[in-house]
Length: 136
Length: 306
Image (cartoon, rainbow over all chains, first blue to last red; front, side):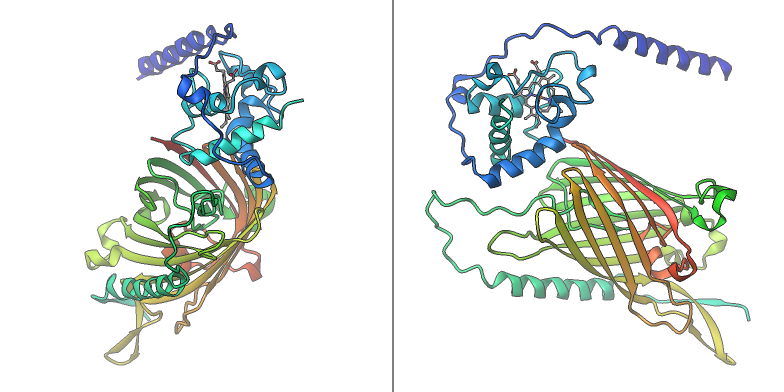
C-alpha cells in the first residue's frame, strides 16, 4: 500500500519538474496566414452592436491570456510558452482582418483554436472588430 | 398509525402528454408570425437567435433555457451544505452532512442535450434530456422555449421498496425565457413531477388513500442580472401549485452570484432546496424560508468542445 503512495508522489514530482522547466518564454516565430484568409473581407460591419458582441466574447474567451486591453497581460499570460502579442501596438494592428480571423479560428500552440467553441463565424468577425478598438 | 404505501401504473405517460400538448400549442401560437417571405435580399442582416440568455445550463436548482452548442461535453459538480441555523457550531452548515451531485452532459446534435448524474441524497441516478424548441430572435420569436425531462432512480437498498418501480420519479418542465436587455434575462418554467409511490393512511377501516397526489405541479421563476461582463446576480423562486392533503412541500427562495469563463461557470448561492434532483426538490422540500432554513450551495460546470 505504502509503495503505491510513494510511486504516485514520485510521478507527481516528475510531472511538476518536467513542466516546470518548459515554462520559459520562447521567441516569437512567424505565423503564416494562407492567402485566402489574408485577403478575406470582414463579413460583419463594425457597428456598436458588433463591437459590443465582440467585447462580451473577448472578456469570456480571450481576456484571461490577452488581458483586458489586449496587451498580453491576462492572469494566465505568465504560464504561456509563447508571447500572446500586444494588440494596442500598431505592429499587431497592421494585420488584415482576415489574418486575425484566421489566427483566432485556427490557433497555434498555446493559442487555442476557437472555431469549435465559437462556431458562428460572424461572432469571430465581431471579435476582430473589437480587437481593432484596442489600438492605442 | 403505520404509513402504508401504494403504487400506480401511471408512470410517465400523463405528465409527458400534458407537457407535449403544452409545447405543441406554444409552437403553433409562436410560429404564426412567420410570414412566408424567406427570400430576403442578401444585404439584409441575418436574423440570429439570441446567445447567452444565461451563463450556464443551470440557474441554482433549475435548468436554464440554454442548450450548449453541438459537440459540447460538460461536467457538473454541485454541493448543498447543511442549513445555516447552527451558526458557528457547524460553520453555517459547511461541516454538516452535505449533498453532492456529479453530472455529465453531452450535446450530440444541435439543440439536444442528454445527460446523467449521481446524487448522494437517496443514491439517486438521473437520466435527462433537454431540447431547445424555439430560440428568441430580434424579430420573430419573443422568447426561447426549451423542454426538460428527467427520470430519477432511487438506488438505496431493497428494503426501502416494495416494487422496483417505486424507485422512479419523473420530471417534465417547459422553460420559457427572454433576454430582455443584454444584461437582464428572465425565465418562467412550469413543471410537472410524477411520483410512483406516495405515503398513504387508512381513513376508514379497510380504506386507504395517499397523503399526497402522485402528480405535483409547480412553477419556477428565475432571473439573471449581469453586473460585469462575466459576473451576474442570479435569483430563483419555486412555487408549488398542487395542493395535497398533507405534507405540502415548501417553496424555495434562492439567490447568489454567477461567474463565467470560457469553459467554466461558478454559481455560489443560498436557498432552501437541498436535494439537487429537481423532482425530489419540488415534491419533498421541507426547508422553509419562513423558519430561516436556508443553506449554502454551489454549482461548478466545466465544458469541453469537440
